[in-house]
Every structure is written in structure tokens, then in C-alpha cells.
Image 1 (cartoon, rainbow, N blue to C red):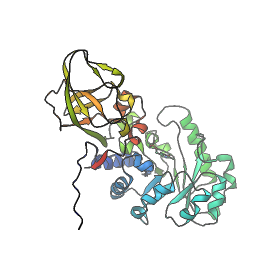
Image 2: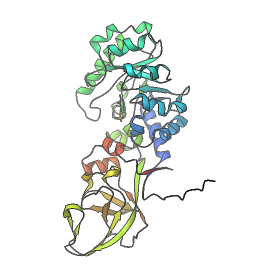
Image 3: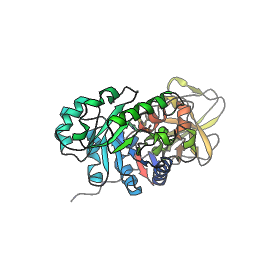
Length: 351
Ligand SMILES: *Cc1c(COP(=O)(O)O)cnc(C)c1O
């Protein structure tokens, strides 16, 4: 007989908003015009939980997912097989072949070597074009060497390096990509990431590949109106104390009280991805009341000012201000780093 173990209530969580996630995908699909929106779900869906994200987006009608490697494809294979396409962005190494050949996922071939490796399998693939980012992909001048007629090429894609900026690199990459499509057409063409969708219809082709904006990231004004916050970290106040004028708080006394006031100690820290950049600059919220972070963020603990809500007590919960644009300005971290860095210790709670 096994006894049920007592549950351990968490002291910090992330509230994840299913409706916002789905609304964001729908908005990006709409903004993609004639193109359809896929979804970048690499890195565990930017840290939020790939299985939960894929299930919700499939229910909303998303049929193309992008992961970084074959482990990530395997994690969603039972959900996607026969129902949605999965593209492995980092390509296929010799060591991946035993798994890749029996996987329903497709490699995104990034070099002529990978083309050669995959070609004889007769299985479908995608192709990455290097249109000027010089990360992964095949150079336009090398495309003639691809035996395209003998291969089953689904998506021919490229990736924008600076879609979040108005710079000449965007139209330059667009022209390079069009030149590539004239040589290797494939069934579908895909160029835009989240910010690229907002660059307009020239950048849409057949399929777009948003990631960041699905999860609440906003890097262009056009997305401001439609993209909703998905992830909100929450923490419990595990101790309340009173500081007097001159009292020092936390490592290296980076906050010194000027007067008597209360502080709350939260069970969250940089081990949860709430990094040092929020020291003396981040904030938590209780309803509409702002509770600033005081002093240095510790590994497992944060102190917040309770001056504006002195009635808060141990056991009460507060929400982290984690709107990605605001949190990015507070911390100096990119919106990508903020969302992907949320630690595994925070229990994911989908609403
Ligand atoms: C990560 C990634 C995306 C998604 O980019 P976002 O900026 O997060 O929208 C799209 N395409 C490729 C090739 C990627 O690596």
C-alpha cells in the first residue's frame, strides 16, 4: 500500500494565460495577411512549456512548428505526428540521422553537406537560405548545387537579422531571399519572425514564424495594440519585517532605509531567472499598487517595499511586473532573455 504523499504548495509560480497565447497567435496569423502563421516553440516554447503551448496552438489551428533540435521534436512527436509539421531549425548532423530518418519531423537543411546527407532518404525537408545574417543556411550562390527536382522540399526559409529595426538590411535580405526562391522554390516560402510580420506584406510569403510575440514580446509599434502578456510570475511573501532609518538590506547593503517602513521577503530570486538587473529597479504589484524591489536580488529571495501596502502579510501573494517591454527596460535584459530565462523551479500554472 502506498500512501499519498502530502502536497507541497509552491512559494512562487508563473501564471500562464491560455487565452492570451491563443489570441496572440490569432492576431499574428491575421497580421500575416495571406500567409499562415506557424509557431516557433524551440527552447521549451521560450521556457513556458512546449507541450502546453503546442496543444493550445494546435487547437487554434496552427499546423507548423519550429524547434531547435531533434530532442525538442521528440518531446512533441505524440502531439504533432500526422497532424502538424515540425521543422528542426538546427539541421541534421550525421549523428542525428538514425533518429531523424524515423521521425515525422523535417530537418531544415542548412548546408550542401546536409542536403547530400538527406537527399537519398527521399523524405521531405525544409531549406534555410543565408540571406545575409550569416548564421545558419546555404548561400544564394551555392543553391545551383541542390538537386531540387529530385527532392521533396517543403519550406524554403530565411531569417531576418534586424526585423525589429528600420534598417536597409531588411530589404536587402528580402531581395536575397527572392533571388533564392527563383532558384529553389519549394512548396512554401517563409521569411518573417514576429517583428518581420510587422514589416508588411512583402515579407509574408506563404508562412510566418512568430516566436517572441506569441509569448507577449513586442518589438514593433504595430504589435503593441494586439499582443497580450502571457506569463506573469507570482511570489508569496514568506517574511515581513520592519526596517528603521539606517538599516541595511541584502547583500552588500545596496539599499539603506531612510525611514521606518515595512519590507516583504519573497521566495524568488536569480535562480528563477529574476536576474541581478532588477536589483533596486524591478517591481511587484498587489492589485494596482506598485511594490518596488529593494536592494540586490539574491539567489532565492527578493525584498520588496511594502510602504504602499503595509497591510500585506506573510502568506499573501504578489505579482511580478513582467510585461516584457517594461521588464526589459528595468533590467537591461532582452525580451527574449527575460522569457526564456524563467527557471524550472517556478511552477507553471495555466489558466
Ligand atoms: C527563433 C526563430 C524564429 C522566431 O523568432 P521571434 O523573433 O522569436 O519571433 C523564427 N525563425 C527562426 C529561424 C528562428 O530561429
